[in-house]
Length: 305
Image 1: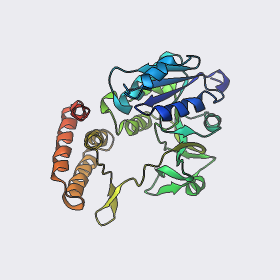
Image 2: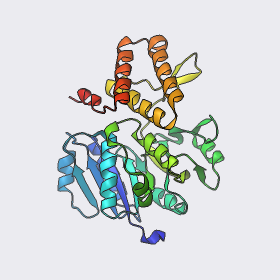
Image 3: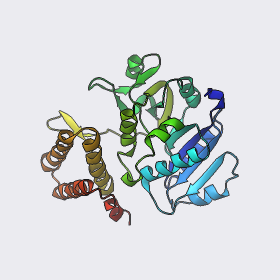
Image 4: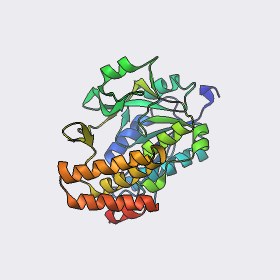
């Protein structure tokens, strides 16, 4: 299909970030070539639903869900909505990122031969630094600076890697082939699972190094452990840790195999036994793994009240 004939919809998932959402929507409505903006509101309590309801519909449409379904549920709903409305390409993003001018245009320049591709995500305060580091394909090297990203690119692309769901484009054909993100994950790991599923299905994946989305810094990712040989994604939030432990085990069993899953279990137990002793977090992890093995995706709900 010629690119001029493609219908492109942006899907934004939001929860209690009205000011950020308003800034993002203002940016998106001025993006050339974007047909419409679909906002999925995860039952926000900060006036987001009322703001969306009062919008002049035009190219912006809002949908407020009855309950908070997390990022996973929001993207599941939003991607289905975009496809139902006839989108050939869907541009997926959280409410806290902002595409730089020309981002979509740059992504579309590389549309031929790709199914699932996106920009680099840079620090809003320091656009030469990545918010989410990129592990280069074919090795263990992780890059944090745009200088290294550009050096690693081939014809403007780093193939085989993408950071969903921060400004990524996905084709309607791929959605029809692999389905929607796993809504039951709620948060953490749903984006990674979708990339792994796309990869397993033979999708052509890439990062376009000259297309950028600005994002607030999330600080250092990973706490050093095992004498600095590796890191662990520790978080003070029991909700986030529970979902990470449950969903990561599901992903590792499905896409990496039993040994990878057991290595993750061992790493978690080591971290909360020796690196940052926390018996309560060990118990929480074990409960999350038990739920993963049972296929129970309701355990996170107790943290939402």
